Amino acid sequence: MIVRAHPLAPVLFAPFGEVLDAGVAQGRPVNQGRGQRVDVAPRLAHDPAAVRPAAAVYRLAGSSLPVVVGVLERHTLTSQVFWPLEGARAVIAVAPNLPDGAPDVSRLSAFLSGPGQGFHYLPAVWHAPLFALDVAGSFAMHMWETGTDRDCEEFPLPQPVFITWD
Image: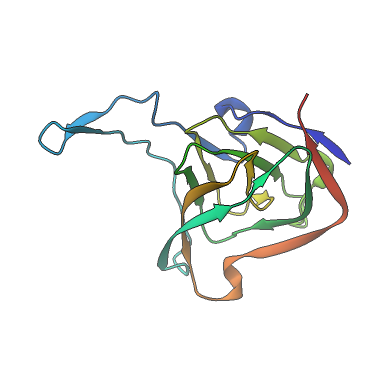
């Protein structure tokens, strides 16, 4: 299966989460006027069972298109946020849920983030593991966890999906 990626845009990504872009938002002065705080206010959510906040840095090798997706994952108890730390772009693949909770791979969508764009997956959104596009990149991640295998559910794909660009 081949899926063509689109630029990461709020309207297209809305069923799966939110696009976070501090570069276009208004800020307020902080640190005695030496900087600005830009609040992006994603709709973060988590189940009461996920009580442990988790913050991490993902260091990823660069991948070229097409990327090959062999597994999808989801976090049923929490939102998950990624922010690029070095301006790296990301390849993002998401799929809606079927009535039985499995991913609807036939409706998988793919996006390419722009420099500085972060993104927020809503709880229980099926998504591919993150890919840094072209060059190595680091991404800050935030979510909540239980400390059990309930934190991440994986779904191996019966056939690989190839993400391409025009």
